[in-house]
Image (spheres, rainbow, N blue to C red):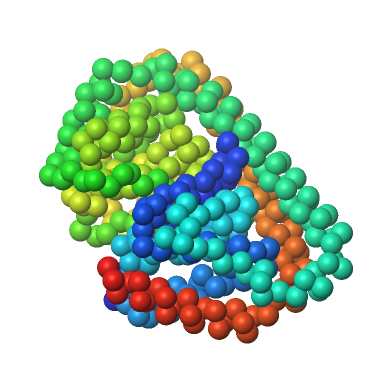
Length: 367
């Protein structure tokens, strides 16, 4: 039975749209097909249909979802990260690095009747501008939430027992890396969660297997949790240990999840301040669980209780207002798609899909 994993290659963050598309597959992989074309030309539908065909053929797959539309796919990876097809249009522009040798471009605009689109020019321009403005408003709210998060974290950081935090980071990291072999592969960076029109969604249950060693940590912002993840990332690089690094959907400078497939070790932040990973866990048997809040000086925090609550409230309000703007952008995008759908020749797209699946299956058999 084919193994299916779900993740996000890009996200709506406090720094704007953040792309990890360069990490979907290695640059020297067997084949990467970049899909181009306007909204409504069927890129996501094509990806889903190819995915179904490959899954039925027993090929392991990764579904890379769109953070701006819960039902839309941005990429599909088949086999051992050697075959890929992805949406290469804005905001995640992707161009071939090794044209012909690895990468190729498919323009689904070749399957539309331009004469049916030209007459809708003014509406297309208007909706495109409105959609862009909705995203700008969303990112502005996320910047405001970032300021509130920073203040929220300073109150806890001020009360840290840094020596105790460092001791625990070193002890946990030594346990985490146990029996992990060296590798020539470079780290892979993605998101396990995203800020979407449907709220904050995560797919962590598809990434963690039942028999893996799960190290769970939690703690307030600024309590040292993210220092642990940064240390683990740095040490994996120094030890030449391959790791999958999944970043925070709100602030990609922070890390929520690290997986070392070679020794089946998983480090996960279950604090739940942004993405609620714990509720989606396939298992809750932790090899080790650490609460960084136990290392805080409670007496140093007490004078700031009201300010803590106020900053936390501002953060949550900013987050929810941003999601509302992202939802509005999706609604506008669907209006925009309607201007292109009638112009598409989906029969030719279906014929193209069959040839594409043949190509992928042939390449998969080479692995």
